[in-house]
Amino acid sequence: MPSTTRRTRWQEAGNSGNFGKRFAELVSSGEDIDGEARLADTLLSRGARVLDAGAGMGRVAAALLRRGHDVVAIEPDEALVRQARETYPGLPIEERDILDLGPDDGPFDLVVCVGNVMLYLAENTEREALRAMRTVLTDTGRLLIGFHLQDAPPHARTYTPADFEADLTAAGLRVDLRAGTYQLHPANDTYSVWILSRTQG
Ligand SMILES: C[S@@+](CC[C@H](N)C(=O)[O-])C[C@H]1O[C@@H](n2cnc3c(N)ncnc32)[C@H](O)[C@@H]1O
Image 1 (cartoon, rainbow, N blue to C red):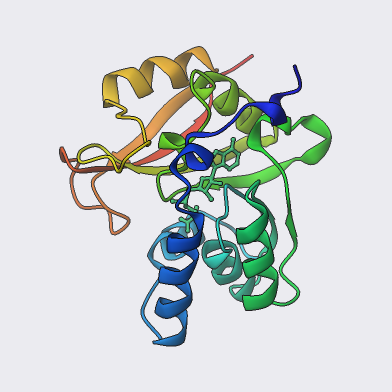
Image 2: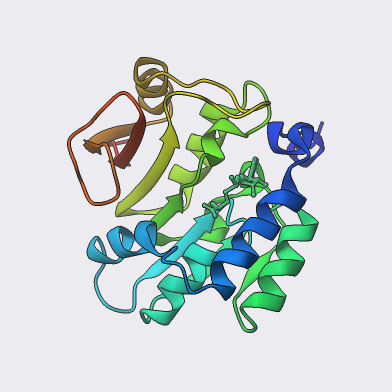
């Protein structure tokens, strides 16, 4: 079965419309929605290659594009891809699933996968998704991941740090840093920000 036919928890949740509307309001009110992109930017040389995996309506990818990086965004939710194209004309965004990534899509200096994407993948595809994102990294490339540890919204899974660490290890990745926020406050029980890189092999 092609991976794209697997129904994500995001599709099960059916909250694409509410999510898109909330971010449209934040954009038009000038709210700061660039926190994840600011941390991503500090990890990068100027003009680096970045993949935003599960980009939603494109806010993180657009902020990295504004900072001069060579950015590609992928997002399987058709409505959010449409919103991204309308909100950020010129943003390279493709209607695609993380599970369909292969070596020819890379290499990227950084893959950004933030905003609970890991909690909304199709059931039992976490290791496959981590492997797919690893596949498109340069040898020294990194993966920036962020998700809630508590109070998962309906249809999102609960992902403990221990389970996530088992999955990333199985996928050939290691933890370079774990923090509690995108401003690198200490790790806590509420939210987790991870910077990962490839193990050898
Ligand atoms: C809460 S939204 C976050 C969007 C964006 N990263 C942000 O922070 O604004 C979760 C996203 O995960 C995406 N997602 C879930 N499973 C996915 C998969 N297999 N491949 C790519 N994106 C996926 C959903 O389509 C949805 O856009």
